[in-house]
Length: 377
Image (cartoon, rainbow, N blue to C red; front, side, top):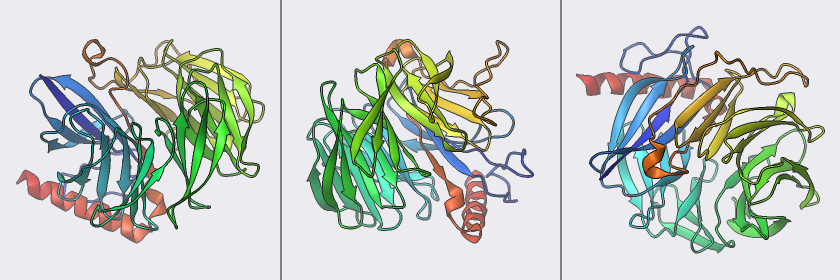
């Protein structure tokens, strides 16, 4: 039997370096970013949500939340910061649900059925709606954020998977297709309308939207290149060669013009200059990588895969600066035995907390500290 563990990773700061323990009575200042990682382990069937804090070391365990009777693999997550809820795509053949976790109470509170291989998940705080890309039936299902009732079921295309959101336009981009052809479905989150498709060379993934100019970076399934989509023209305008077919995840350091490309086989991290599309560096990656994030606060890149979570410090002070690659650098790992579960058995998300007002941020973490302390008593 398999025991499945869902891990929530939370970098937290006091005075820039100290860890805030939610088990104490003293709330700290607000962390700038959430991260979450799911891993699978042997043993009795069980899901556990683990909450982590961070100081100079990558992660520190703070709390665990049981998730009983959830079967099979998980995929992407989404967070409702104000509602203090986490949405988890559970795409196991015998599961096909989106699990709802109350982060205030520290437990799972609802299971949204009727999914068809749920993969990408996005929660709109503006319109209080949950969007779920379903791979088997190729749809994007839209649910009410309060009742979880189905609002709409939009046909998208083959293997609808990765999502990317443009908060300025309120558009959600859904990747679909296969290795031969693909596209980005454009959904207006205000009206729930599927307004158009943007054709790509293959199924796009790792969707990263650049704020300073209207374009999207994507992986292309089975291709030895990355795609760049012009949002004004609504077309793929260029493809940057990588030399490998297994690019599956992207992270973007927009301010320093760096795009990080997570490659599954061979496991490596390729760094490209977004001004030129040229490769500037290449370092060891994580086996079976499934997602990737750039943490601007720590200048770190995080990658989840079958080895768990790896992190590597990096610098991006100038366009010429590259990732630090010292043989003495150590990676932080979380347990995820590759011999049992193969690829894509972990997933993470990041979501900026600084989008909330300072008053709301302080209220959120003050209540989290009190609640965690009361549960320990």
